[in-house]
Amino acid sequence: MNLVEYTILAASSLFVIVDPVATVPAFLAMTSEDSVSHRLRTARLACTVMAIILLVFAVGGAWIFRILGITMPAFQLAASIVLLLVALDMLQAQRSRVHETSEETEAGASKQDVAITPLAIPMLAGPGAISTVIVLQAKAADLIQVVALHGCIVLVALASFIIFRLSVHGARWLNPIAMKITTRIMGLLLAALAIQFMLNAAAELMPGFFHSGAPGVEQGTQTNAVPSTTRS
Image (cartoon, rainbow, N blue to C red):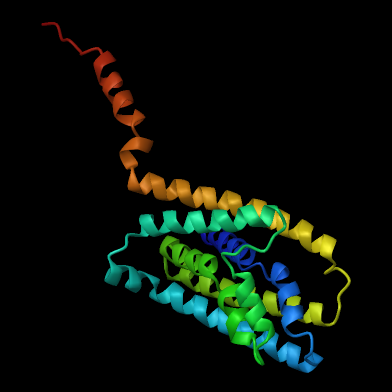
């Protein structure tokens, strides 16, 4: 995978799993009594914290795996299941409980400051987003792709802040119908990404099963080969 392909994969998958568009209703509900300036401060802080958390897990994910004795294929398989659960809810235009529960949203509405919890964690930087950055970091072929991934994390955080800012000022394109359509489209893309992660992990965990046809082909080629003869 070259740099352009990797960057597109990282940016698209991160934006889909963070899903700031679907977080807008909860953000507006939890800051309904705040002024515009306070709402913007909350959005700015939440997106900053989200970026820091994802960067920390991207850099330290491999170290955590070594301590716990977890292999990357095993984690990738678990992450693909989490992403698939989120995608199935998104296809129904529902906010997945993998991001946050209704109890966490209600608790956030009663808090004075919701920027760090529950907005940054777990609504934006939830288990799915953390799993995604760890898997993408492991897929990076060189330092340039690692830097590209970190840039994508910052870019998604910036895009999330822009979406929150538009929602605060009442942008018309953030209407319920448009949000549901966008959520379903991103859910379909996320489901495909989750299945691909699952297949990649299964291929690494069971390489003999996915390449079982190769030995037979090689053996048949050797069997059907006609030995060369020499005449004196």
